[in-house]
Image (cartoon, rainbow, N blue to C red; front, side, top):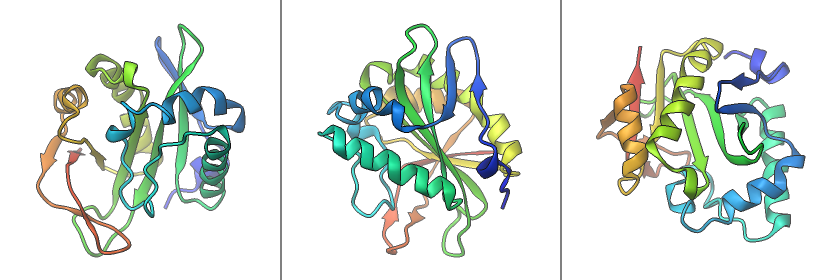
Length: 189
């Protein structure tokens, strides 16, 4: 496991977006994302102990950010806030972690979770984000394989992932509770 990202979290930037580690000061903008009822069905809450990531109070959003930062300190995952460089508002988050598993095909995979506010759930936005982060994250985590969930109704995200080179697999990711989770797209170098 690479620990470099957990001691010095990088910032990723292109002409459209900046990604940096999520901090408590992001809570107001992130509340708009995680209270967006149109966006929540597209979030990946697989293996998250029943959390759907719908937060209808600022206190719940604060608790989520606190939990995410604790996971970072414990080398669990990194959660990045996505900052729209034109408006300077946060439009979502990206979570990444290196997964090890002896029970499914997703051993030694980088798992990517992307949560976007519904008005940014467009193939052009998703493509710009993938171009910004996939290669550097694979290098940082020393991981050739990457997987991300794309729910079937999310045609915009599916279009971007396929255009980027991801392909859908019919095999489940098996959670800590032995539950099977489907609809994963994978990219292998």
